[in-house]
Image (cartoon, rainbow, N blue to C red; front, top):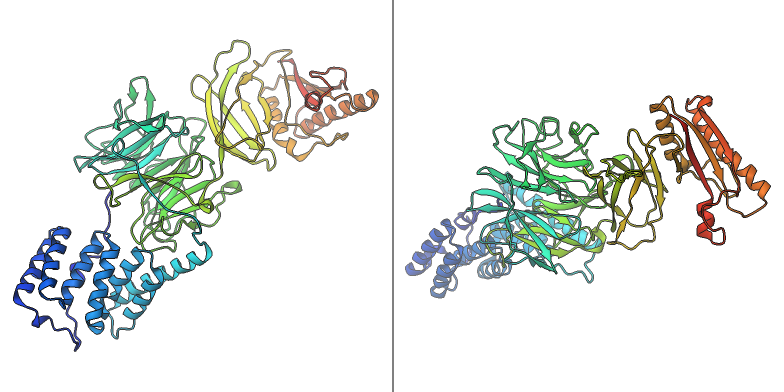
Length: 638
């Protein structure tokens, strides 16, 4: 991973300027010219600081040495010292504005680098007034003008107000004299994995953990994951068990760079496994990001069916343990340019990515886009200055808290090359706040953990928000957007499905909740409460939000053709007992009618209303009465 340069100094240091002007290079003193030529040689060898010092000696001898000021400005620009660059361009312009006119383009770029977009626009407009400009110069000027106009308009629409962009270097524990990039974080924010370019050529993974607010010294990951080849651009699952990364020129690769997966074992990280030809192609794949439920893998690819050079794709984890064919995310995300570095936040709705195809500040900018219902995408939004600059921005990740961001940069306080920095996001570009739910799926009779898939549905919209696969011992961890109530459903062959709803809409963000899920073996007299069957008060018509649960009951009966069940209805003690008995009977019958309408044989189904006669909680409280108002399913035979 390298840092692209936006301009080359020498392309504008020695351009012939065919104008009759006040400044005459031929009249500069010989000693100053010799220093100028030495400074240029130093710049050609990438010794910009040395070149600047040499040229400063030249202008001491010749204070009107305009070419020297232009060269100093260009070198400061290469060092990203925009203020130093601007000051020297202004000195050159003050000497001879006509001679300087051709240099308004690089002058504008450095003004924009400092965030002075209005002045940058003035400078590039002046550059574009030059008669008979070369076609490439016009194209470059128009591109910059469009970027500056975008920046000015963005600032009007989204003033920074009190926001301060203050990236903090993560320090010597994380960063080194080598380049570090591609941070990835576990859900609790306490384990960070980075790519480090060891000895300037080999990419390996290093990990660090946070204890009492301090990061440990980053060390190579244990196990068989680091090799003599290049491993980089990684994503860790939120539970810390999977690491998916980019491996280039591996013997079993399909293309130049492929995606691989490694699993955390007792002996460290396992040897990498290629994700296969449904994910990888004969082109380039890189920059993976795993969704919080480990069901969706987002990545960048340069395969031929895209919209531009590099597009963002998604592949879905299938029940058989394989990945689906990669799907292009479409024109809302991808353009005729390059899109890369996707990061799906813990809310499973907010995607960050880089692009040079969407309108921005001049290079690869960072964008955010929201996923709606049925995997549709909203409108991509530029993260704005000063997060985005005229430089190329790289990968960005956001912690589960929705505000703490991490990215790689080579700022002035870098320990060497790229370092990992952290900063706080502006409010308007943050993802949804999340909370964490963890627990265990287990056999109710034996308490043995059961590997299972958990489906979580937004009760208000009936949209499936997440599908979580437990580990081999039945443990799971999931992040969910706050402000919603959820239905939890688990299906496993040989067991009654689990169904429950949890009111999490009022729970605090960044908090953790423990929900264990017992599954009952499918046998006579086993019963469950159907907690996601809903009726209006004193009514027996099924509410639309009951459909998800009813359909799961249908699937259970369809997949077990000898299963016979009874649906029973129960009420609280509000109202007359005889009315409650009728109401409960009608509600149970409504469930049976729905199942019959879906094709289940009436002979396999029975129903009965018990009214208020079988309470499971105290009717003296509203919470107790809510538990007593329930619909149950009982196995008659199997």
